[in-house]
Picture (cartoon, rainbow, N blue to C red):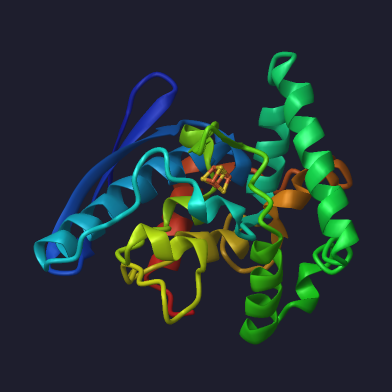
Length: 253
Ligand code: SF4
């Protein structure tokens, strides 16, 4: 990773193998220390570039991504976000102008009511108890069967598209869109990703990737971040934190 400093930003250029290609990219990092939440826009831009290269390669091999603007069929799924993403999304909502903020808060309240009635709200409060994959799949299917859209979905499009969480950025389906109404392992085909940035983020609230996996359901971001407003995670020099993130890409998990 090479770097070049200007006034208050540092441009870091790097090369990364993506399948049989080399991705050459640059990110613009703050010159000072940041929290993970503050670094997220850089990590999202980096992930978009990386995932773009993965998709281009998959399409060369004949796979065609069927996701398109205006299709929000997948947006009724349980979306796990990292704690830093939960704080950022809650802050984003808090800083929205009225009446949009109240409208969104009402949607989160509505979703909470539906999840509570279905017995899912409490179970999703402590996601640490959903340690095994089967438990996560089961609750994911129960959640989806409720048919409740993400509060950020408007007119079948993501209303926070530039700020959507990592998990949503990684969702690329190649099976027919009609199957997304019934997402089961046997009906949904996805582009295989060499790395899941969302999973790195679940362990990255320390800025190093050394903590155990912790995630928050997107439906719960207001409660999760409200209870931990004082916990913004440690601040590290942005270059160091970004380097730590790159190291996690090469770390088997
Ligand atoms: S954040 Fe956006 S992309 Fe993700 S589930 Fe919600 S509406 Fe869909």
